[in-house]
Length: 122
Image 1 (tube, rainbow, N blue to C red):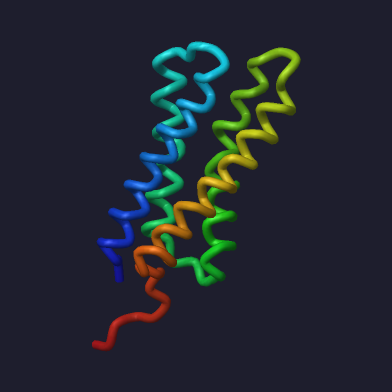
Image 2 (cartoon, rainbow, N blue to C red):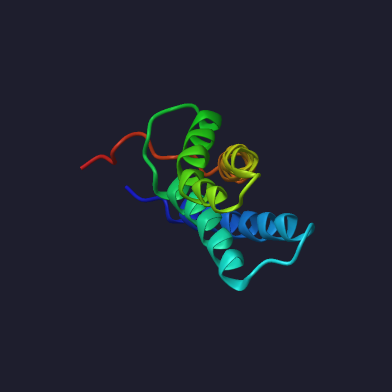
């Protein structure tokens, strides 16, 4: 059964993570609008997925796993930047892991909206 509060909280923290990620990446040089939008959407997707996921694992491992998996498509964009391919690839995945961990931390521990692990009684 879907926990609507969990979904909303995780998605909000995903959006916040997207803006933080965009601001951090834009601090060294200006970014294009489509890079900003894709960054915000990618991090929001991590939050949304954490909110709807029913995977049975420890809360911290859940956030780390989803953060890493959903950062892979964005990390592959680094191969369009000659000379910084591996730096961007690894950096994006590591930051996805960190964002996933913090989204799950705030959702599960701070707001006490853990994933539902059992089905409701009929």
